[in-house]
Image (cartoon, rainbow, N blue to C red; front, side, top):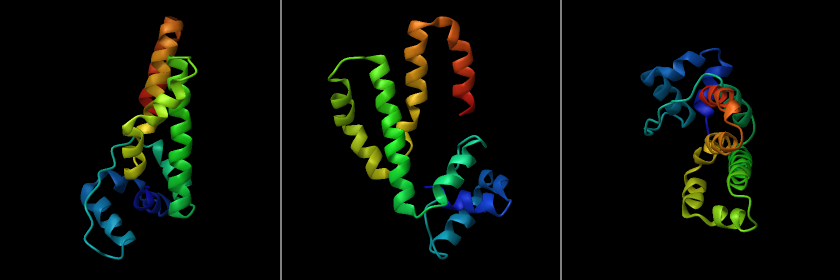
Length: 137
């Protein structure tokens, strides 16, 4: 989760998330000064909204909510691309799903690209607007 970045946002220093040394110092502060690996913040500024909301609740709950909502959105995107009964089972059983859950990453959030692809096949006129939204989310 994004607790160091959320802390910077709450302290009105969100721009420091894009300064590697300052961000790493914030990460260390969250873990009581222990030496922790550096994880870059490569998200657009609008993602701070999500980070602050998810980080406002206990870590386990925030992680669970993030993974559940992004997995459901990803499965909905897969269903939009291939509307067959077995799509959800196959997509949910894909090994990368378990890797993503184990690492708590944002791989499921790439559903926007899949939804955009599904929409472009049905309505090419919508693609331009959706591509713009995809770039900013």
